[in-house]
Amino acid sequence: MKCSQVIENLGSYCRRELSDGETHALEEHLASCPQCKKEHQLTARVMGDLAGVERIEPREDFSLRLSEKIDQWEARKRLFWLGALAGFIRSNRRVLATAAAVFVVSLVTSVLVIQQVGPGRGADMMSESGYKGEAVEGIAAGDFAMREIQQQASTDSDSVYMHYVTGDRPAYPGEEFEDYVYRPVVRTVSGSGQTF
Amino acid sequence: MTPYTGNRPRGRGESDEQLMLNVGQGDRNAFDELVRRYSSRMVNVAYQVLGDRELAEDVAQETFLRAYKSAARYRQISKFSTWLYTIALNLCRNELRRRKFKTYSLEGIAERDEDSKIRMDIPDEKTQPDLEMERREAGTLVRQALESLPEKFRAPLVLRDIQELTYEEISEILNLPEGTVKSRINRGRMRVKEILRPYYGSEDSGGMS
Image (cartoon, rainbow over all chains, first blue to last red; front, side, top):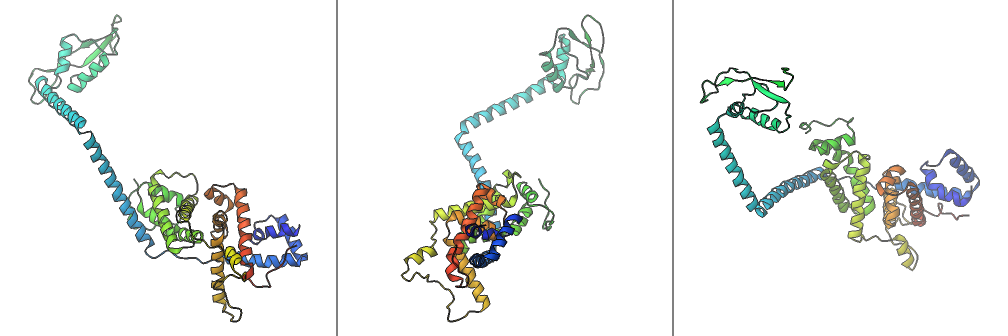
């Protein structure tokens, strides 16, 4: 190993970063070269001082100050979202007012319609008019059941028909029709007469 | 959401990465534990790169603050320590650029000085200082030598020879190929040695073949 190579690798040698082969070659050279040996002594001293360079400790209130900064940031973040929401409302107040009005009117209308028609009445009306659709068991369950029938009717095929069998059911509280009957549903496939 | 754990001390077995994931779910105690583990290292790395204690504190605080802000987006791609060092080093770099950090080069002063001698608080040869003072002054010399290094040598040197990180970690932190990192560290070491050569006594100085 040449002197220039040794000098270049002295730092790594002091940090034990060289391979076994490199270390061996370098040590052989150091044993026979007084100048490189002196350079090694200087390098070792510099490396030692570098490793032992002054360390400082964080100030005692480091965590406390950091915690306060985080709290402030969290508060600002909350304010930001509130501010963003307020800004959105301000800039879209006409649209939002219209949407709110439509919502309220729809709500009131729905309540009035439900009061007029009554729960489950929709299913009765459909059965009376010979509604054709896929069978749903326990149909007399009010508006929810009616909605299901309407949804299914749109995808139904002509080959499936509904037949209703009447049965007794207690009236809903406050229901107008005291003779209201429970109408479980069975369905048959058209033509085959199969019931399932 | 991680359940509130009160002031229960965190187990030592919990990895940094797991703690950080917990921070992302709103666990402030996990963050406190990470601060406890890394505050000293962050303050020191900033101090060794910037050479200013107050600034180092500010940079370390900002490092943790940014880590906290990013906690919800934190993904375990690399080691938490590497990630934190990257934030700190980026902040140091910004600080150096922003303030046009006033480094004074020992070499520069030496060149300007008529006697080619650096006027620093170095031991007077007539009065032999005690060992502790000598050690402290050697530490000051090394720190000043570090500060006089260009940033591209200083950061890798600090991370390797003072912070004791691996080449692989340094490569990731500085976003440089490992070969470049090794080369810069080596050149940095040689520069520091050349800066300090005049102060380390005639018995250490020797000519090269």
